[in-house]
Image (cartoon, rainbow, N blue to C red; front, side, top):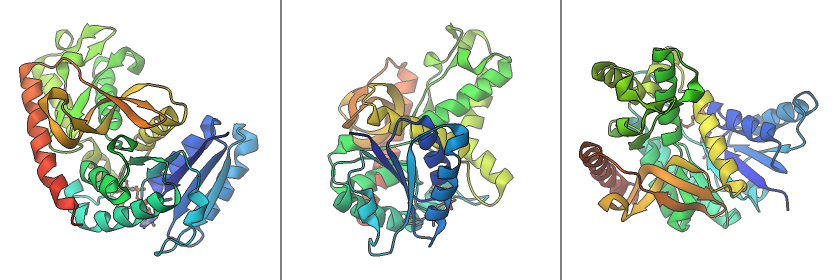
Length: 316
Ligand code: APR
């Protein structure tokens, strides 16, 4: 049977994610929902009209949903649901400033997803990411492997872009890795960063690498400060769409994602940015990589920081 993916929230992040998923032309159906009357229907109509030009057969269905779950029948049978609903940052805000307001939204969405698409894999992108992923798992009651978050692919992409730019090399020659949280305790892994297979530390001085790491950690805020009215969506949607596709195709691709960690790296019981293998059931394996002592210590610190916050969301 053809695959079906739903994107909840038809704002900038959600609509660009739906566009990327449709243009892959591997899904039967892409569903786009929002609580703003007519917006998802309008965007779906517009996207469908791009089919003859872009040459894809995937059908996009837009559906306005109500506060009490009206309209959610449209998501029935979804293999993957991407949750983008929630407020984005404004200049000067941290992702954590969104916690209260987005927790209400994500809980409401997650409860409806559990009711109407009980077998879906859920990919969360709403911020603060690590906390909203933990909350979506609690609110759906889904097995932990079936709920994951998008952050690491984006942070890694930002880092790779900055390295490619600094060295004036093709972006395809650059490999980077970041683990930890999508925020202040993001953990870059210099030991896994290479250009044409050469360690980054041989190509750039330590202070320059640190400068790029800091810029990566603040990568979202830099875009927010320029846009002034919202947050990034082109790179974020590229990451989320790739994850959804990996799940739908049961590809087994290993990607940096926010996944439930229970034992790996000596860390237990927390949603954290790690590398994981993705398949039809979501995270099929958390892949622990060799870390230096300093990198491991930073990852454990990140785990404790997000664990404290994730405990708070249970009651939100
Ligand atoms: N159900 C469905 N959609 C909702 C709900 C809800 N309960 N509540 C809000 N929305 C919708 C809004 O109506 C809006 O169209 O979510 C959409 C959010 O879109 P934008 O404001 O454009 O924000 P966007 O840039 O898409 O970011 C969405 O992703 O990166 C994160 O921090 C960002 O949390 C934010 C999320």
